[in-house]
Image (cartoon, rainbow, N blue to C red; front, top):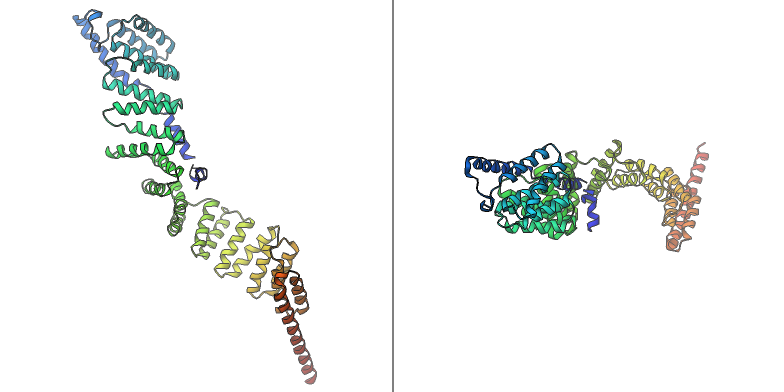
Length: 459
């Protein structure tokens, strides 16, 4: 199965598109980090008001001066009021001190972080990216500042669908992070998926799941769907089946149950495939035309033609399976193989009427012959010849000759056998039938004369 084929199911699997949309919509705002930041600056300001203010040139690189602290408070208030342009103007005043090299490391970090925050709120992702890049040029970043900056920078590239850049930043994050971040591994995996680099994506999704399990956290259904899709795309159907089976147990969703038999068929575990179809149908998850027909086909292929017929018939009666020529013909075949000729005839009559050629009428005539209903058989055979476009009309003429013989219509039978003789493949057989029909005609006529003579004798 090629990757394009898998989009059938699987990536015809639409739930996975919602997964990627959800990942792309993850909020990247740093608001949650800001309250802690402001709390620290407030403490520092209180200390200054108590008389411990130091001259600017001697201040610690990890404290905010009064001027910067005051303006950052203004920025935060304006931002919360959604006055973003005004907030940027106040930040511009701090930027002037930055340009004159009057800010320490802490003040530079805070300034660029608020720039990034406001740009993100405005969806000015290029501006936010540049702000985080400025942060990464600062000296003496602590561990938390470094990790958060790399994480948000990668996330911003991700939301812009700049996946190579996003991966680069997330990989750098992993180099510095003290603890593994399952979300980072997930985003790297989905970024590779978006670039159709499926083999590269798989280890990162597996690592994401491993981290979550180590923290005793639930793994989302979307993650299972993504991993399964990745295995489909690299045509590793055995592992795709393992992921799908686990997903069925954990989430018990109809889509997974319906997909399970298809995957079992792909890895040629046909008996389990049939069993899976049976369970899926019993659970009420098979509710479409294609699903029920596939189930019926599995029953047929596993030597249960009567069950196949019942599935097809029930689907038609409920209006799920369309009563078209192909489906009706298949239903008839199931009943015929199950030796239910009377039940096989009715759907085949409908299929024959819909057909553009005479093949279904030829089949119908043979069913009637098996049932001993030779008048109906003759009618079906003649309809088949009338419609034409037969693979072997000579064979149909021979079947017609036999039906005529059973009705004691020997001349009609001989005529049909002679028509079959025009095909050299049936020449010898037709000659035999002509001889047999001739003898049977003589025998029949002799018996008829004897009966008439006896009737006259006893009159």
